[in-house]
Length: 239
Image (tube, rainbow, N blue to C red):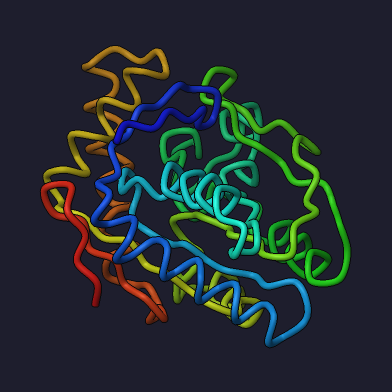
């Protein structure tokens, strides 16, 4: 079945087979529901994946699916892309002799301190959360009000075992890692950049300079997850 979602200001269509819904996604939501009830507090779930894997779309789908079933506690999907530094900051800040804008999307271009602070507050109170716009190419602060009992946070580096990123997992009750073929990710990332207004040449160059390295960073330097979902030819395999 085809589902439509607005992801970072872009309209996305995605097909989630009914078999995957019944065998993977609904059991996952049931597990999270039971875990939240057992802990009797707000549950924090991480969904990590390499860029282009479809984690943002999946998080919105799981949010939608949780609201369709009365027996499941509704979840709220949040992304970490709103914690990227502004384009102005990236254009005027250098690392290794090059402006950060050249590496946009890499771990260095995120305000991880603010992300940690928000998640700490999230454990005990309803807060506002930033959103990233692929039309504006900048974060929109205080865009989302967080209020559900199960919060699903998605992002490339949530399980990254490097620097301050490694602190994040201590705030997570359950973690999911999403995988896909490297060639599929390359195609998706270039297409996504074009959808955001870049030329094919610009999108390909950005992939070679930044996105490809970020994919490998996530694949090679992520902490173990409670659940691994592998996507091949649009079919799900659980590890």
